[in-house]
Length: 331
Ligand code: PBG
Image 1: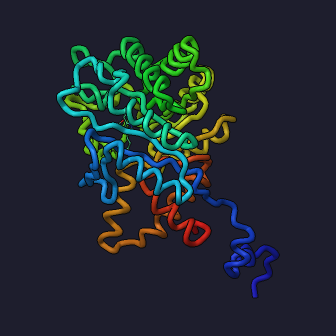
Image 2 (image 1 turned 120 degrees about the vertical axis):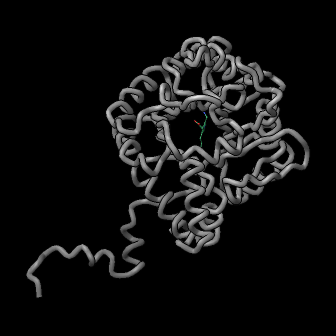
Image 3 (image 1 turned 90 degrees about the horizontal axis):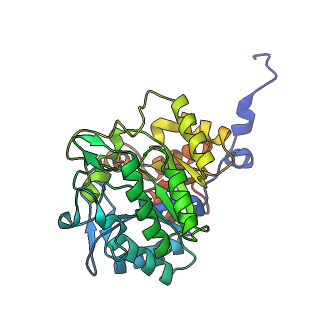
């Protein structure tokens, strides 16, 4: 026999002991479910690259929200699929008070006032160039884009969103949006900042869902370079000093180190976005029986939480909440 005092396996000997000392457990209320909106009535349109996820018209989105709430999900992130004919170089539809997104917010908050809504602030679904900011001679303009983003955030605040979710990565936008919201009396509207949003290869299916892929070039002059870690802390400090209420790391799985850094360096809640490409990989592997889908979802979401996330945006939300409801726990 080995003469060793410490045998960590004593704490793993059976499931009761493992449960006793388990350090991480996900609640359904920590999940944020992304919802893709589309014009029309009675629409539930599946998205080829996101198996199991659909675009909803506002009426069917309300039923989806009701179903999710029965499973304990209370937070939703809206992403409107804008008709091509409404996309323009200066993205005016983004701040149309009767545009799809704003009508969606109004209808959802009216039907379910207790729901927490996150609405995206970035121009890509509205911009005929498919970029998060305005494009001029191939360049993504910063300060001019922020002026439009301010209008967009105001339109969403007026419609009654809980948090504007700034995913655009323009410099200075958090402070500018906070000021303009406050100047119009929207002190209670929160800001979630996608503080460390990386130029990632894992956004493909999302861009497909919204037909929002950039028409030219890539997003590397505004989204972060995945070789960089310290730079995320710089973005974090700026956003905190400019008034962000929640800070986000995106994507999640290749960026657990960044989530951990955010947890350590901020006292506001940290969100993580388990993005479309990360979701699609699991769905496709499960379809081919390469892994057990439920077990993979549990491991993925738990590891994002363990790294330091307080809330998780994920397309696995419904299934995860179902498991929690059925078993009383995710793992
Ligand atoms: C757009 C936006 C993107 C996502 C959320 N907001 C795509 C992008 O930046 O190109 C991606 C979400 C996902 O892949 O699930 N500002």
